[in-house]
Image 1 (spheres, protein in one colour):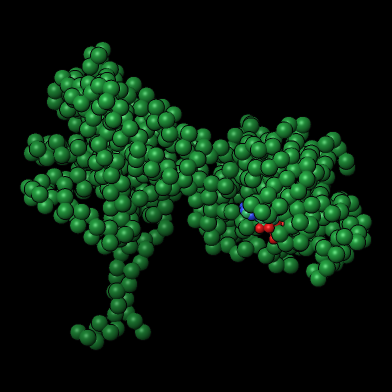
Image 2 (cartoon, chains in turn green, blue):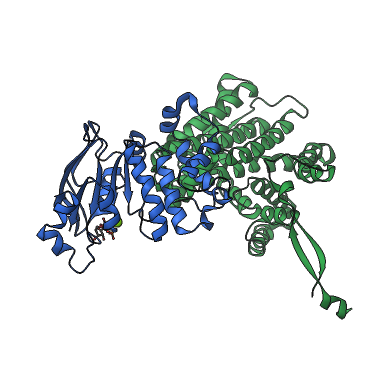
Length: 338
Length: 252
Ligand SMILES: Nc1ncnc2c1ncn2[C@@H]1O[C@H](COP(=O)(O)OP(=O)(O)OP(=O)(O)O)[C@@H](O)[C@H]1O
Ligand SMILES: [Mg+2]
């Protein structure tokens, strides 16, 4: 045995460039087509069939994971142009309250409030954060961290929009699967769109702003306007999640601005792997169910949850998705040495 | 050669804390002119470029470009108006392929407006531009990661990035620093060609011999002030310039 081990060693190879390039479709064999299609199609099929397969309780967790997933995608999109948000709850809360307000005071159906809240939330997010797009790194992050708290306090003290009680008995989605599939569908659309955009010229410019904003400015590109556009997109996605949440639970309260909604998406992206969106999606699909599963543990839940998070980040600092992607494109074989 | 006035700088001043980087500086540039700027290290040449291109805001003074006051405007606004610069320390996107670096200027509204209908695929335009800069299009070089290219290529990539904007005024901040002799020899004719095609150029250079071969006029800076201006010969015969350059090599 030792002799064999001495003469052979495992060699890791990257798969041929033909099968890996996204833009070249000169694909030779059925195997290569499968190789490319499978990782894209399989998760979609899985997620679409899950609501049928899962028990009711876990179906609800899945919806929750999609809400967090949208926030994580929105976070990753902002991070792509160098804006680090600690205030995803703000996007969520704005969307949630627009939809809630419209539904409570005007009794509008979700199919009207949802688009209004999505666009309106994007506009409000971009407008309110536009004065601070010049701030970098931790300064921008601090402002975003404060915004949801500010709004929460304002609602609490003024008693507007239901105050501490929130607005309840709001219009639900039609009975059945509509709500569930709406959020799952948008989660996928958002994931694929973002992955697409970021590799187009538009996304290239956004990533360049993160890498060196002065070089981008010298290329006659208004980096602040681009950042405001990114804020609109990220804000709209977060607001959609909020508006969806409002109608799904038929309630909106101050908890829409809760710190959890700001922190957990960041944790999900870190765990899944930043910069890929797939990492953000994967991270939330792991973290949210995990935190539910740990509920049984009672008081120790948060502690164990944190330990798991820390350990996984230490073990896979690049993020789970980067790891999986790398392994998927590699294959190992034994080669003779000497 | 001398056309209408394109750039006017009036009593520009800038200090960084106690350091007076530029003091009461003024000059005039005409369309199609090729102006050289020289001066010892730390004399304020880069600061002057930063002031003109909006990367640094002046404490006082004015910059007027094509009749428009552009003092204190944002760098992207100034670039969009047509003043485009290269960087002494190249600023590029090292984890992008060389030609993808040009997508950024090519997606600016300035280029969209200038190119109008004739717009081709951005990637093709980028590769064409690189081809002009001597990145052989049939080699792998334009497609390599910028980070893997030798320094001379990076400087030319930075030049290509500037030329992608189709500037009205090109400012080169020590383009030749860190380039090998052969690279300088192949890049200089490019610059001369741009000049012959009518481009207005300001060129900051420590390699006086190469600079003097191509420029119409030279400006000499010392301690943030202009100490001489004129043709290369005139300038190098000035007493003050000789003093400022004492100890550094002066080639005629
Ligand atoms: N951002 C800044 N902050 C503080 N001081 C600065 C800054 N930029 C330049 N300076 C100072 O201003 C002076 C002029 O610097 P500048 O870079 O313009 O010189 P230069 O002529 O370009 O020199 P070199 O030939 O070395 O490139 C120097 O003393 C420098 O230290
Ligand atoms: Mg300099």
